[in-house]
Length: 87
Image 1 (cartoon, rainbow, N blue to C red):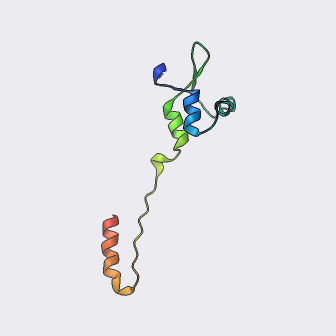
Image 2: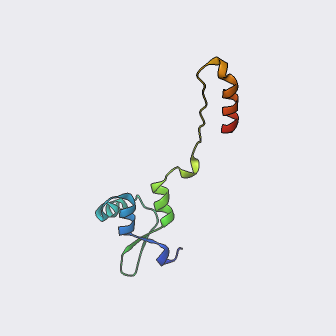
Image 3: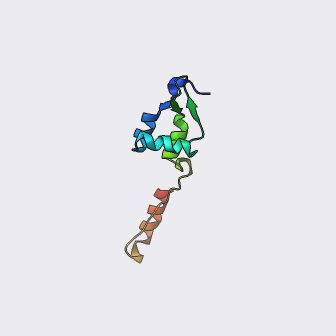
């Protein structure tokens, strides 16, 4: 379990998403957050890794696409050079 001081408050989570605190409370009620921790004072604390995953859902699954082109058939040697630089 993470240390309590490393967790995010509900206000920090709301600010990260650009929504109000009531929206984050509703998300908790609807089960959007799996790892919500309650403090002794019954305040919500959120796992920063889970918040990051929600903000950037496919950050580890990115596909990089390269594009090379030339204007005419006579420039096809330039196309080969461009393609080599993209690899």
